[in-house]
Amino acid sequence: MDDSVWWLLRDTRRVMRRGAASIEQRQRARLRDMVAFARAYSPFYRELYRQVPPGVDDPTLLPATTKGQLMAEFDAWGTDRAVTREAVDAFVDNPALIGERFLDRYTVATTSGTTGTRGVFLIDDAALRVTNVLAARVVGAWLRPRDLPRILARRARMTMVNAAGGHFASTVAAVRLQRRRGNRVQVLPVTTPLPDLVDALNRFQPALLASYASTAALLASEQAAGRLHINPVLTMLSAEGLPLSEYDRIARTLRTTVANSYAATECPFLSYSCQHGWLHVNADWVVVEPVDVNHRPTPPGQPSHTVLISNLANRIQPILRYDLGDSVLQRPDPCPCGNPLPALRVQGRAADLLTFPTAHGGTVAIAPLAFATTLEPIPGIDLYQIAQTTPTTLRVRLRPAADADPDQLWRTVHAAITRLLATHDLSHVSTERGGEPPQASPGGKYPTIIPLH
Image 1 (cartoon, rainbow, N blue to C red):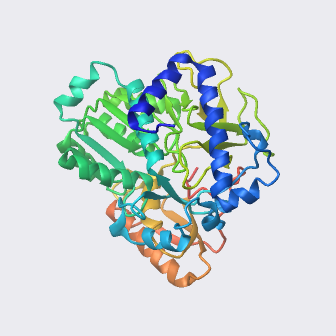
Image 2: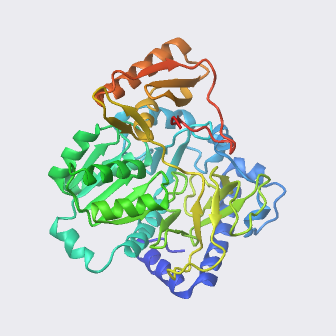
Image 3: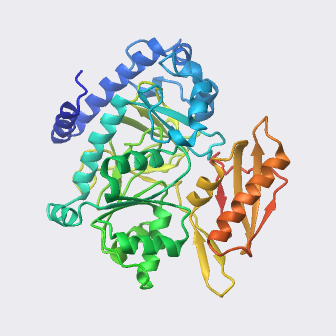
């Protein structure tokens, strides 16, 4: 099969024009091919699928997988025997290599440990082409014809507010985009104090804004207060969910079109929002299965216990019936927007800001990703959790890696959080060491941030 960009562009348009039946046909064929490829080249899947009949195109016939399982079987999971966990870890540990290619042919991206295990994932070039083509589908759905002249008038200036200092997918994308477009791309770390963030945006005046959802909510409040003065044509939100009313508030306050997506490093092209607030799954390239606690299908219209995804594009590390850990609700009827792709809403992703009183009677809010980008580069952290126990107290629960010195790790973590708080003029907020381990939510995830409620 041709996997050139032009062929992929034509194919994505063709299946959308032909509707749901064509989308399902593509999905089944690609699932069958991916399962066969995984069996042939991945020792892990060869063993896992010993009892699975050949030619499977029904995902329910496959056993589910988890992040912990794949990370534990890293060397056997991959389909390229030149890829080893030791070599990938050495690559990830070098910040100078952010945005570079591993073995000159793969992109490396890491994830946070919300399920109890930090993820390290490789993406091949074919999957990147699919991601870029589906991005064109997504942006085409979000932009109107009159938007293009407005974007070009501002030289398509784009601001990305994202993680920094690690091999996160958004960081890698930002580094590569900045190399191509130079000073037309502004990259601001999510840890930037809000006044500095506002000042940088006021000076840059982006036509496009890509931000974590919680940060965009903060920026909308700054605009309403008269401190921020921007009017991006399109604001693209990611990583976290917000109440539907918040998306409307951001759009109204920033005078922008707000676009949302539900995705993961394991499948960056998973879905995109429509004007009715539903997320449409790119089902020609990914299988999404809302399931109960026993991984049986959840009927449309009912919240699932979790969701299993199968990435049908990335072959270096096949993601098949992978438990993403989020509760979703699938729409039981066609979406009024007319998009033939299946639609869902995510029940289990909420952007929780930590809000603190200032020494001068005001408040300061910090997005969860600011803590993630501060702590996750620290070696020796297997898992962390920050609970706000009083308005000015943070309790940090750590699960050290097997080879880490717990006391030294705590000192390093405490110093890092103290520096982060100081940049937001919150030196009066105390950070205490929790003697208990991180606590799992009822859904089995380990929330890294627990706000004061």
